[in-house]
Image (cartoon, rainbow, N blue to C red; front, side):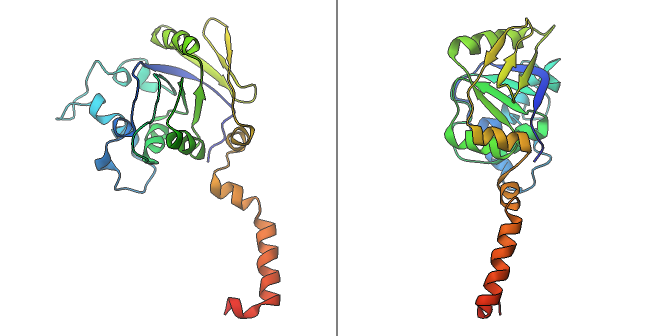
Length: 203
């Protein structure tokens, strides 16, 4: 998993509440187990007409938001059915951070496991960040994970809370497999000891 230290990029305003996982990636695209290629169907039903042409009113079809790395979204982002494809699609599009007042628990947990930082802020803070994102002349935000700060275009800083363990995993680029491999020496030592003491288990 790619490390997350700091991020400066265009923030796209998605001023909608209850953006569920089926809006993020429709269920017909869940047949693949590949994590790549899903960015092109991110928010498919909101981004495209049935014939595949873009809907010009959708934010990610507009400049400069085509290159967004951050989404500023309404309350309860990622609700609905559990699907890890949702963070896969966001990440494949280039989104590394989603800011909202609240997230669905499963989406929130899946985001960390895939290198996406979900940040919870207050309603007033979200309103300010949404206004920043709507300014097409300068919609860039900077996310400093080490300091747990969002730097706004006007120089103001918003601090956010984050579980220390999740923070360290993102900083180190550690998903569940990476965390397990940190214990590789201990696991190997246990397996060798077991082979010596209980050889019948390895036959």
